[in-house]
Image (cartoon, rainbow over all chains, first blue to last red; front, side, top):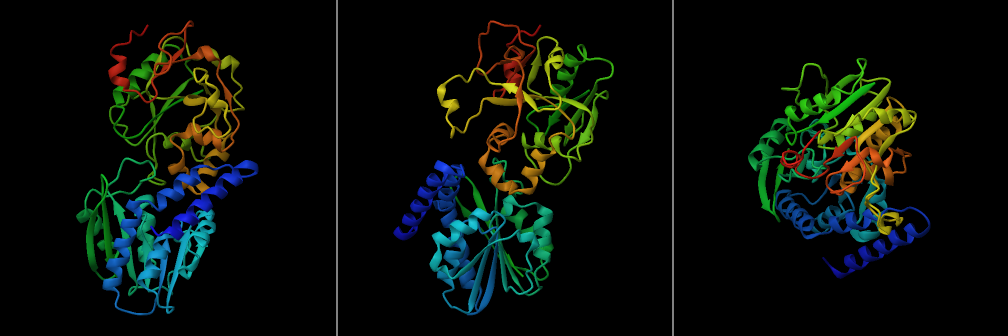
Length: 208
Length: 213
């Protein structure tokens, strides 16, 4: 993590405390923000940016990140795609994420917005992404994939970390996840890979 | 009166449900209806009405308890919920004379007496939901708040519905302290409880070494 992002995250955490003194009381935000920047998440999202950068051979386009959380993936994708012709939108259903993301990654030239990815109009995007498939209902993910134009790329990550109650849609193996994604694609899977993390496996499938 | 159990996953078996049913049935009036809200009704006593856990939204373990407060949950009238890892020591229905069914009533964790539990920011709470009473339809705001407002954040933030209820500022009452013994926190007590709760301990292993009267 670079020092500037670390500093900004500390100042945001300071504000969470300030808010708790007289107003909103939600210290879990501190843990959540730290969690969003931890090594597992950073490595998973850097992996996505590296692979997508190698596969997507165009200098222009538009990326939609559904469930973009506090904006780390948008930041890493911007580093991978620095061209101004590449538009990046990072949406999350949680309105607090948008506020934090604007402060954490102001130079990422990303549109951070509050939106349920299930209500997003994906017709204008060349790449749609969800790295939190384990948190999303399987039927909803299928709708998300099927609602994109047929030639739009889709990048999905899930995992086999079943133990958390918020993980409602894990997969047992990369093969299982890939097969499931493939059934919803209009064309085909172009990448399928696994990243070993601390105690669990992260899976990524890219296709069209 | 609806007596409700919730069984999700494989941690507890249909035998556990049937055993609790048997312990409660001896104290119940004829007009009491027993229901089990479950994803797997196999082996559950035919006298227990099955309410199937719907496919969506997917909820794991204790979060399914919150669904009992949905407007779509198919019961009406007065309700009393028991965690499956409860053991009945004496008539648990006598307490209903003291319960206001217009309100949500849960267990008072009076054993959590340390001052830290009174700190505003303390994450842990002084109630638990091993036994709950309410009137169906009276607390749909709890489910709606969970379901319609950033559900995934609540699932990450709260380990269980007890903390959700307290920290999201829903109102509740508590049962008399003598109603419950917590096997986990109260090894010795000087009263005769109606219900023994086994929250977060290995229920089946512990029950074998506890003498139930």
